Image 1 (cartoon, rainbow, N blue to C red):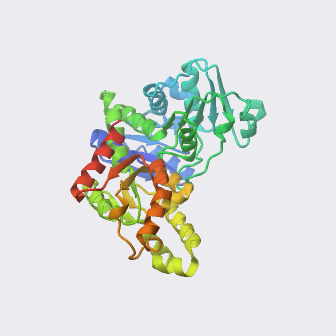
Image 2 (tube, one colour; image 1 turned 60 degrees about the vertical axis):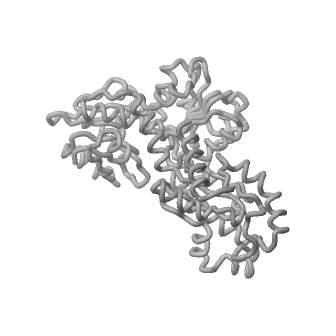
Image 3 (cartoon, rainbow, N blue to C red; image 1 turned 90 degrees about the vertical axis):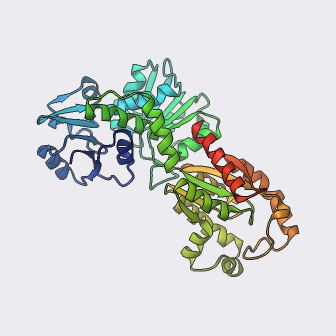
Length: 417
């Protein structure tokens, strides 16, 4: 292997696509499930340069002939370069996290900073906060060590934290939706940074956004540290603009686009065209429900009622939303359950296809669209929900080409802003 990543589990990693997008070299994901395998790999030195992730950022240090002072002080190495048989260790997580904070104007100076977790990333982010002048950097753990000054999550509530940094795997794929902290208990909160990068918006970040608190995802940090690692790999300085450009392009490429709107508004037709244009996989949520249940949608309503259908729908949304690079056409009532919208927003954006109620189809395979009167009543109830859930509204009053153009313009504005 020339270039690549080692770690215990790498199924969720984006490092390969980032490195190959930035520098064009071949980059391998090389999982090493056990410490014995990790030790053997490091002893063999059969690589030009590697990145290191959980849980081996400390394990690799003794194998390095030289470790940069910052990495040694933090006690974690995430980049190792082999130069003529000698191994050199670096920590580009530090510079990656510092970039994330700097480019969003996060002010550590004089702030009370709460760091969730006690692993290697805790050490890295804490070092950045201290170096940037934080007044206090407090550590929170589910199993706190009082001798180290660590706080429990209950004790953290009275910390007066202004900045929260998550370095735990809470909310990370495949355990999307989990969160250890109630942000309502932090009235002085100014910023939330989550080092988790999959999904793009963890439950922690969604909660922060609901409170109007600026919240930033670890994917940007991941791209930044990869660019800084690539500089060590190649010995070439890269323009810092590469980070923002790569982050924007990859996030747009990886993000899902969820399509919502009234039954018969054109979600499926526009969704298929949009998926083809974007090079993403098209997913019809109703088809997923029918596959999961073994029943057509009308039969579910007839046999079990709407409540059961909504349960199956939420299960399908939770399942599908964990994946990436999809255009997801949702049923008209998906907005009736808040948990559906949270799931859809974790890895993507939501577009509301807005078509006049008079132009909607009546009846057919849609159990709740039996008449125009029923459609009017439903539209009046759901329109506020569609608008609240959507990142953008796409009018569908003309041709398919018009609607597709409007959808692409909306996505351009969302991802380029």
